[in-house]
Image (cartoon, rainbow, N blue to C red; front, side, top):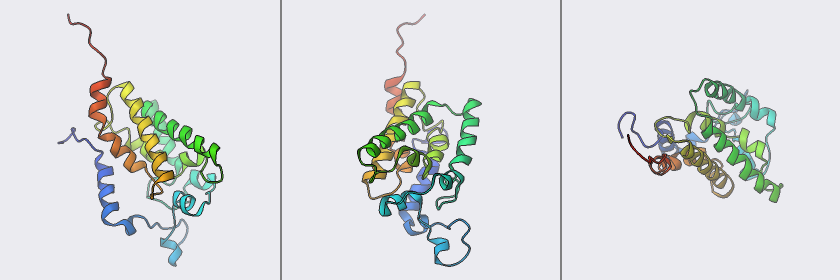
Length: 202
């Protein structure tokens, strides 16, 4: 631990603690444009609606953020734009979000092709929940992500697999937070076993 040496993403550790301590308060959302009544504070997230009611939210609502969810993660478009800008400026390494999002789309797409009536399509997986926020701004944390290119690919693929498994087969509708925290634990091993070999010294 210590500043600059923490194993786990501090923001996600804090959120995991709050979700475990205050599950009701952390899973009730204010519905967009609803200002009074019970429905104003009981808006379900698109992933919860899909998982437990088998209803898809429109792509437009997911893109523009007209859905229930945690502040900062509801609009896929408003997350994608700064994520791409930071990547183009070289602040974010593109390998982690690319492998993370690509794995979720690929694996989610396989299950969708197997049973479209039961599983959501890849685009829904990409736009719903905290995936965009996690892929661009949480998984890419410099301290808690791998240092090597190969390690970054493995990290993103592993996190993507975990997201799909948790979303489709666990009792939770979302798995982004846990997928990143679990892969954070493997970062020291990834750094150790994926660093380039040194074949000689001067």
